[in-house]
Image (cartoon, rainbow, N blue to C red; front, top):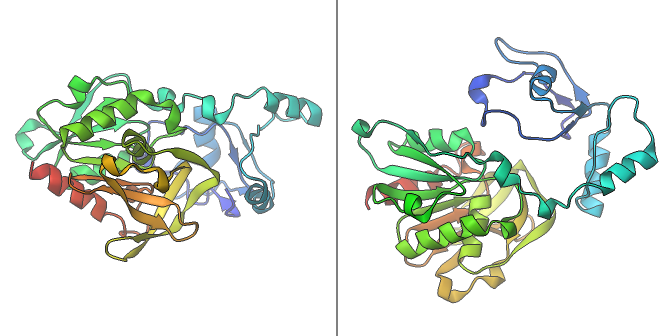
Length: 309
């Protein structure tokens, strides 16, 4: 993280987006121990989850290096392990990012329903590729019940007649290795019910429509990426954290999807919309409260489509 002071406010459990942090290591310039009220200290949070970390790094210089050279693998060694050659040798044994099954590590193995049928409102299914809690909260605030499905769910489970619409969640890794979720997205598109893809889910839907995906040189990370909507011209501030893009020029016309939003920094694809069906995807995180309210209309449109089915 390039912000100079990390950990000033601690971490409230109610703010957590997952059952535990999924990062493999943390690199900061300065880690502070200050907390507010019942928040957890950063060091305690990392220690509870067995996550290594290092402080005292010129993280802005490191970020400039990565911007110049592109993403590269790295490790955090244990205290006292300062043999440079040994560290380089250890890095060279790491699997390629493209070869790791990150989604298999974070997706659940069973189906979970949230919300009582007596509440009314449509039931929305979420294919959990690495789901963030605020996506569920955002949908629940709009009056829907939620069914969370693993990325290995069957087409029968996904196309349950009770489910009014599907969300393909964000998640880590390369969509090119996720043939199963791509097949699920293709089945939902053929069925025609409302579909929303977010981040990795956006890439999955793009591949289901026949588009190619490609790794970015150093990814998009941060809470201030400007995105323009092609139809309205509206520019919104978005939160992003991904390594892969959908290549717009490879979208087959027969697939029905078109580029709906673009990144104003580099021109990359930020959203897709179907020409006829209630299908929309966004590369950014509307649940991340950028702006802070700029992107929430994504959920409004999806829930409206699911409610009218």
